Length: 254
Image 1 (cartoon, helix red, strand yellow):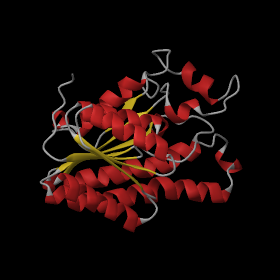
Image 2 (cartoon, rainbow, N blue to C red):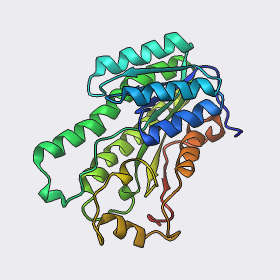
Image 3 (tube, rainbow, N blue to C red):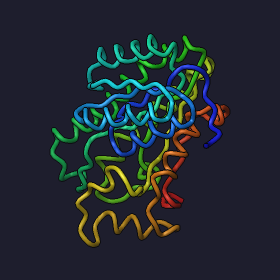
């Protein structure tokens, strides 16, 4: 059992049915906190993750929420506060499918939709959660971004450009809400052996090979290495860390 510390109340994970978000939900509940999470289409995975939380002797709540609908996000946060008393940690672990191509080859509508999904979606999350965190006496916001923000890799613009907006929104929250006891950090994700990186159709010599050639540790990250970092930053163990973007990328961005 790990030693991550959380106060009474619940953590919220936006995107808790996917591979990355589900792993975070699992570790949060193993760390002794109740967890509420959202999903968009995969109800079956959400139900399995609720059972997983309960198997870890914690309470769980899952709801289908479209992050582009502010009313839905606010209603979900209000339900979580009513159910668990307060929320203390927020994790943003969702994002659109990765389109790997030169930025000038991207369809404008796909580019606009990607910006909306990441930046508008995350804005709705902080818009709904910051007042709840204030009311509860503070807490944390942790957003999963990409290591390509720190070191761009060709054809990855549809990931790194919107995630850079997420990072700067985190910085704004860290600067402006620290007085209310609210921390905000990013985990800049590198090549992890789970989640969207496993769905990329990358031929030999493609983006995955390019990425791996620049990783000093010469391997993909294990999922638990990412989950541990996210839950650490969300927990009270990281109580003096805010406004940071921590790469979990095997040294790629060094």
